[in-house]
Image (tube, rainbow, N blue to C red; front, side, top):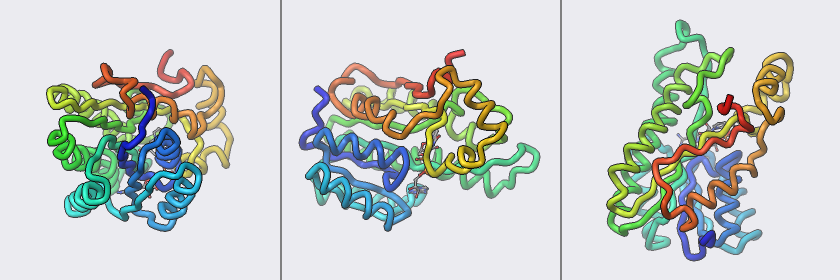
Length: 254
Ligand code: NAD
């Protein structure tokens, strides 16, 4: 039931980091992959790596998840190349930190646009194809910051966008269950990627504090999202929808 043979999976922000790791896991289970990313160079390098490692077809579409035109093109090109879309992982995300009173409105809009509006736009556009097929699995990457407020970081836009992703997931799960579409969220804790690398490199009090608040006492590695991604993509999770799955070393458990 974990096999993804003959599947087509779209992974946004799949060029690097958590997206790359989840795309690799799906490819390893037999899925063809479409990497949707702003960064064509990194996406092409990842695509080449996955093709040679797993022998699946991997396409790259340079696109912005906040652009309605781009997202429509993603659906059209994917259907033209593969004939169907089984899995969508909405993983592209950005972070801009500032105290609530200092946050520039443009920064707020940028974060909301990628992290929440982009997830809606991709889900709606790709979801229409899944509705036509009568089948599909959408996996939205939220964060533990969508569940708890992670002080002393000042992340009002990020927190709100990631909390929104959880509600969006539950709403789509309820509305689209009759069409055979399952929609779930993964809420990672601190994972070592480009996005957080700066904090881990600088170390210091902030890292010590985070790690002391993580029962497992260490950050997660990108490959630690692979199992849950394969589970949610595959028929192994056929009765699972609207779920929020924490992968955070226990951070939100206490
Ligand atoms: P990352 O910065 O390493 O990679 C993000 C990728 O998304 C990049 O390839 C980037 O080019 C792409 N991207 C950004 N904006 C885009 C857009 N508008 N359209 C298309 N592609 C775009 O990030 P990461 O650490 O791998 O995080 C991936 C996801 O996981 C994000 O949604 C992030 O919020 C979430 N997350 C990360 C952590 C962590 O600790 N790293 C924890 C919880 C949640």
